[in-house]
Length: 161
Image (cartoon, rainbow, N blue to C red; front, side, top):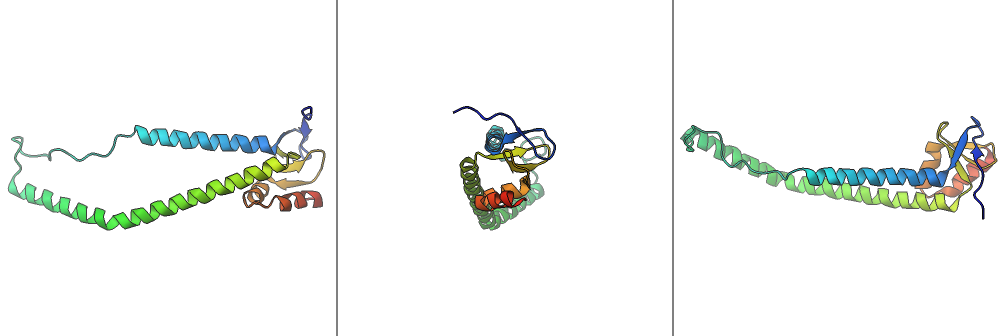
């Protein structure tokens, strides 16, 4: 089977790319950004505790500074303990959102792969079928694909947008 020739955008007449190629490029950029973020996070040194507070120079702290340091340390420990459940809940919510996002992207990828007849003009930010004049805004098309409603996208294109 031969590769189809270039497809023209029905709006500007420029070259359109298969929506599957645009989507694959988007997924590759997202993965590259995720890897870059993980590498940057791994490169950061772990937070450490100070080994010695500023003092008089002999290594011994005056009693008042020592008491203030202990009090501040205790308050910090209490606040960290109080914040742990909040941090855990926020982490769980972020993990759940990431999982939902991954599932939505997989759904969209499957829908795009089922419809090789869809093309995208990135200049005009529209989606269209090869050789057809009707278009759908790219944002609307992506929303429908992520939702898994590729039937609604095809219907909109065939009805004229």
